[in-house]
Image (cartoon, rainbow, N blue to C red; front, side, top):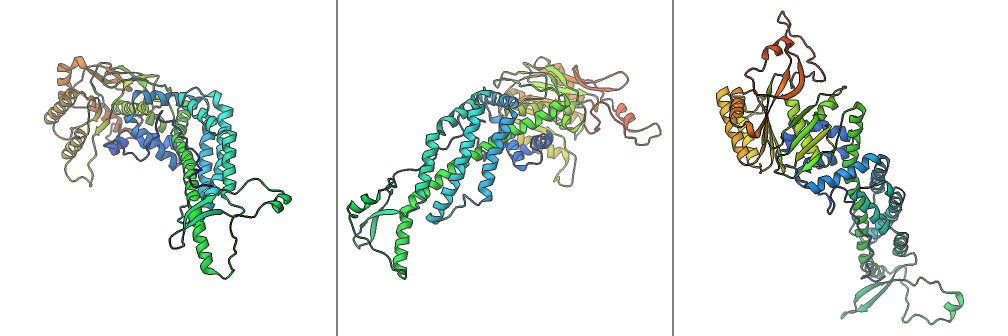
Amino acid sequence: MHPTQDFHVDEIPPHVLYRDRDFDWRQELPPCERAIVQDLELETLIRSMAGDNEFLFGAVRKALLCGLQNDEATILYRQEILKDCLHNPAVIVGLYNLAFETIERTRRHGWGISSRYPSSMLYNSTDLLEMLVGMLQRLRGIAEVDADRFKSAGFTALFVMLKKELSDDYLASIQDHLAIAKFPKGISLSAELGSFNESTQLVLREAPRKKQKWFERILSEGPPGYTFHLHERDEAGARIVSAMRTRGISRVAITLTQSADHVLNFFKALRMELGFYIGCLNLHRRLAAKGEPVCFPTVASAGQRILHFSNLYDVCLSLHTEHRVVGNTADANGKSLIIITGANQGGKSTFLRSIGLTQLMMQCGMFVGAEAFEAEICPALFTHYKREEDASMRSGKFDEEMARMNEIVGHVTPNSMVLFNESFAATNEREGSEIARQIVRALIEKRIRVCYVTHLYEFARHLFDRRAEDSLFLRAERTPDGARTFRLLQGEPLETSYGEDLYRQIFDADGQCETKQVGGAHSDLSQ
């Protein structure tokens, strides 16, 4: 075997998250990701997708938070792949389990452990590759049996590549190379003598594969050289021969190790990328069991100011409750600003969270919690929610709010989206309204979309009087008897938030604190 003869198993990228590149699992998370996770309750969504599997948790979290970087083509590419997954869940689970089994078998038997000794590298790599070839055969078997069930460009390309690259002849050639690489009859080296009679130009030679008959061996000429045997006590000679053998097989050992790494890395990438779709299947199963509607959103390019939805609901709230939750319908096409006002405990914060969650789910290629949803891509998403004061704060609530706003301003870009929930209410009405007005005006002038839940009537009224043409004003519905429907209707801001209703719900006639269900699925008074 000449050292210039590369023994290599081609690395086949899965490409089920991107059409033309691998997913970079080491990329940085988006700015202010901790606030996004906290304010949108992403832990609930991710845990529902991953269950108790920490590997799936990490894969889903990374894919979800990094989805804001995806362009329109990538989102549509993943949507088609996810549709295939929903139609063929058993095949997807089988592919994922095969990748998982391969990696676990590698870890369990201690294969792939790096060594600086070529002999150990050679032994470990040949054993590892023999196991991997068997797993590749099983992988190709899935492609041959189930490829016709898939329609998406991603899975079609993957299965075609597997059937083409992992042909019987190719796999047989790998097994032949592995048999040779074990050197069952020893190794054959050629060398030259250097200026001080040291061996140079060591070349590993491939042993003849054809077995000679006995009369051919008798009549054939002897070897063109001399043969000698080491004495069993010649330790120095043994060390020299061992060093020559190590130098001779080092190229083969390195090549086999690299080949094993390529194949193993493919299975790792396959498990990681399919892990995202496994999480989507888990979430879809839970929502379908409750009868919650889901849809694949229509995606528009950034800057078109497209936002239209029907029966949009908070997926995380649905995952927390036994019953279906109330959805909302609105048309915000052409609007840069959405202002949500109205009664306490009316579903305003829940609606705001549903906007942020759905935007993230759409941009990572998922289905969303709605009957219909159409929105433009945003390159970044930020949340600015009110925080309860705690001992960790180094300054007052208002200073802390302004510090977080300053951090957002340092990262926000045109066509981004910022979600405000009761921001700048830590000061008095007039000062808070003025600060909120100036910040919102500056953001809109920079072509940044804003959704704002507020009780600052002066602020909301000012915007209604001056920006009604490019703004959508929604109000939490309240019936004449004070009941909340948890629906948001289009309407101008009102000066009252009906705090008296909330007081009556919490306290009975004698002033005693009483726990009551607010209504519907929204029984948490902290909304």
